[in-house]
Image 1 (cartoon, rainbow, N blue to C red):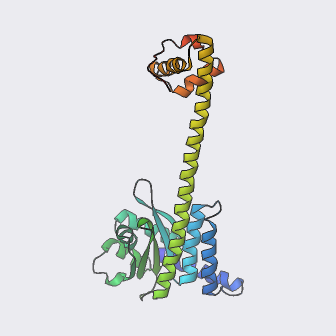
Image 2: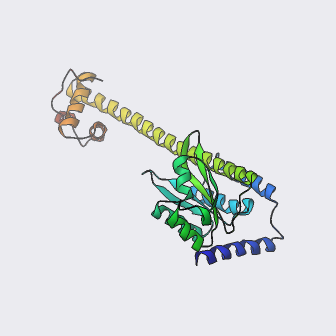
Image 3: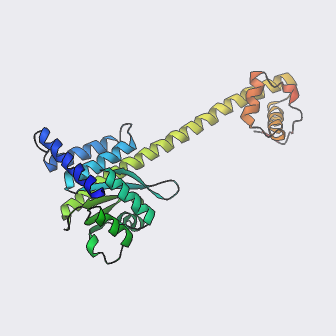
Length: 269
């Protein structure tokens, strides 16, 4: 059944090419793909759409029959993120469940696994090879998604027939994987920077509220600023509250300065 799905997917792509007057030359499509992947470096993008584009274009540009991509999650486990067909997705899920296959070996070693004839792997991946052969897959390849020693996943490429992948196609596949990796890591860095900026802004805003609360306490309780902060801090500790929440209660009028209680002159800011 899986092999039939893969064949139908390939036939559908051929029909689409006929409708538009023939496929785009491989070199042009490869260059266009690199541009589209690189666009994500400077604009908001959908990670899943990016990875789906990558797998689809691998089929178009590299002449493989199916492609899929796995990325490592926050828990350290690989996840299927994109596939050129439903049959490919199911086969990759089986690869993860059986804990064996080219993609896992590629990810663990950080090195490419290419030109593996599943009929002659001599027990390297017994369960995966049996399932893949039943799905019509004969040869497999996997390229690491890596940048400067950081491996975040692997790109799977499958052929229906036996035979080696040309060296220039392997290099092209790695180039596509590298550009996608840069885009993903750049996206992660941007998100982390946004979180850091939000945390910093929250800290700055909190400090403003605390200073306002200190001024109100100092004025109404007749304390200097050091003792006013001490009273504010002690109240927060005694009631297991955040300092900024107590300060907001004071500035908002729900907590009177007279209710704060003791002030420790040793605690200053």
